[in-house]
Image 1 (cartoon, each protein chain N blue to C red):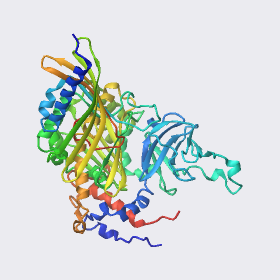
Image 2: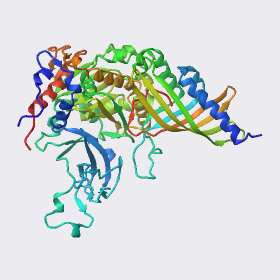
Image 3: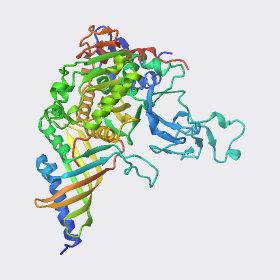
Image 4: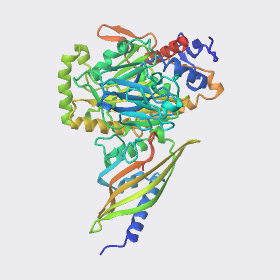
Length: 431
Length: 168
């Protein structure tokens, strides 16, 4: 069946000219389609296992605009349940996290166990007859849930490829961050959550490979003495700065930048020990990238962004809320083994740099809002944005997966839109 | 000789109103002078939880601010570079400080715990308007140079908040 909204993907994302139409950021009809065609088929990050360590633990989150509860059942299995009563659709869980045996809908009292099974219906015997089979009316469960290094992902598409296959080349790089220690990443308590009045893609594309903006947009951070500019521009002797188009829309950046000047001595020795130990877990090429004054920035398609500087990770989801609004939900992550000094330092860095008040984040948010709002007008919308910087300069290397390219290019950034177009073009997938 | 409750409240109202005026008139350096060198300026994230359950005391809870004076000074220096785009051109802000209560005053009248509520309105550009509501629990310390802010716990009433480029 033809969609009610017709659009020409070749005009929205022009693969030859490397352009993207402003329409993809502002048009409500495209936003609606995107919910199902993009968010309905991708692996979406829904939380860290350390947030729900015990049976009965749960957190609430969302997948696209769909509100979900991530639970651990009495057997230790993780479930991702749609947070909406099967009777009249109200949320059955109205708090952010906790531990419970069951969820009771506040409207008519339908009650579900931690795995989503309908276990209580008020006045069941008097009110319902044999046509109503309780076993069919459990909470909707997101059919696919898989984890990678304590990170929980879910997918609405029962036919979806495995998470490992979905991550593809990006996994090699993510291993450098999340598989460097036995324990893997754990989240510090609390979630930074804030609204940006701009389209979610403007944010996600930046994390995919925009190594072009920092020394201009973030000039105030450099000039106020927070960073050493020479580090920042990748002029350090061991220059490893690289952008990677990983495929499947994922992008990754490696920057020689480590905030080394502020780093406490105990943390420096911890990082050295991790680097040494990582050689036993990772390939030599991966181990060579473990920290050592390196920052990583990544976007796992569609909206999981990862920003890592010495020893901590901001693992955040750019949740769409409307064409011109998204919410960032950010976890601060450290190695499970990290000593208190490193945990404290990570927390401080996160609070000051990439939180809602962060000295980087404030200005990024300003641009995401400004760029999005500036594309609302009918006339501006007719003229595409150019993403062709460095096109064709990508290299395949024996020691690095994906299409690699020294900065600055927009190869990885455009890769995000190539994947977006592919999913939008594919249309409805039969259920 | 201790002053009356009323006198204490007037004293700290005056101090908090002066602070608000400095923040609303781009006099951030003078504001920094009101801060003690040992200041902790802490605005933890909030959460929606069952009635009576509060997350604020969770150890290591992440925060919108957990700054020392030096960190706040760095934020001010950043604004002064002229490249802090979220505040360039500068926004218009208004700090409304109310419900001032002196919770405790030590015997020598040189340390005080003071609570106050605030509304901070920020308007930038044409219609980029944000309003922040919250309450603060301060500890002020009397020094030779006057009262200095030693601790400030900022409890914002927002769960999912907007980007913060102002001080509370």
